[in-house]
Length: 400
Image 1 (tube, one colour):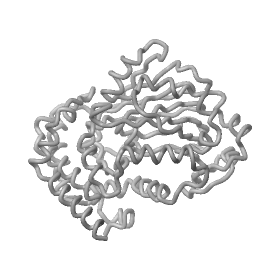
Image 2 (cartoon, rainbow, N blue to C red; image 1 turned 60 degrees about the vertical axis):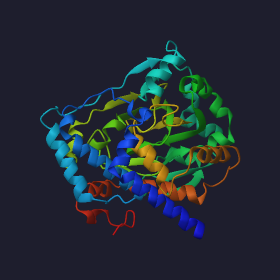
Image 3 (spheres, rainbow, N blue to C red; image 1 turned 90 degrees about the vertical axis):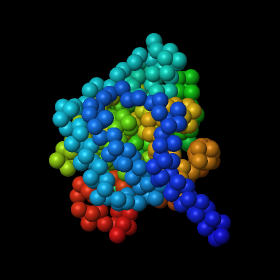
Image 4 (cartoon, one colour; image 1 turned 180 degrees about the vertical axis):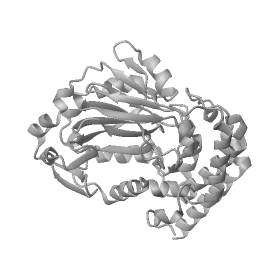
């Protein structure tokens, strides 16, 4: 107990130091934290530099303390000041198509420099894998009796059942490496290893996403990068540079982040006024396309077709070493969160998960994922920024 108290006291001391304005300036002045530049622009930011600085400080404090109503009224005032500065300088933003590259012609060096070291998503064409072997009917024919973790679309209930149940269109499978652990040959057909020279990162897992009844992911980002293979059906991705996090009303968690926007392509500009000026990309993924989704890019995903099968290869890198971090405050704050883990521990845990465990997801992973999905409640996120009354969020994080 005394060791725990000493550790907690140390974290609080770090938090107090981190929130201090002078210390914040010192963090932002680090060369590897200030080199990242977004490739889209918002005008008028020089007129609200002080408000953005205060916003960053408060967001840093919220993340470290994991108190997402910390200085709620002050945060709302910062948002209003930013809005006043940029409203007359920018048109209402609309999504622009995400760039595409041809895997047959782009070199590993060019890809790494343009999309990995300076993080930017891109659709990769002509990778060469056989998408048809991953169609749902083909997977069910070979592995239909395999037990996999699923979620019921209508109730959100998590359970385990045979893969063949997905044919009924009532359940959704996401972020599952179960089939890849049990059947390593599945991974070989994706040419996953071909991307290693392009990312120069450590690939730690392959995870399957299957829907036969329509599904999607609300606006969020992950503390990891991925190559996302679209294998059956069509998905539409909306992506926002993390450099514009002050326009998306984020709620930052130790391992990822969510926003008050819910769906980035159908946002309520009256409720989330800053987002009307937020630059964003859109990517329509067809079977055979591979999306490079780098660290920290906010994204929401919708299925354009009822049936969809995709695989995400997860890549782990070190911010400031393997790539220029677009979210340096989050890097710093997440290391001070009580729930955070260091990179080596996370990679080691994931490798153990892949090579050893072929059974139910451990309770601590279920708790972590449950906490994240509760955070997708857009009412909670909006209330944290003064966009809605706080009582709409009661109970999401046991917040009084």
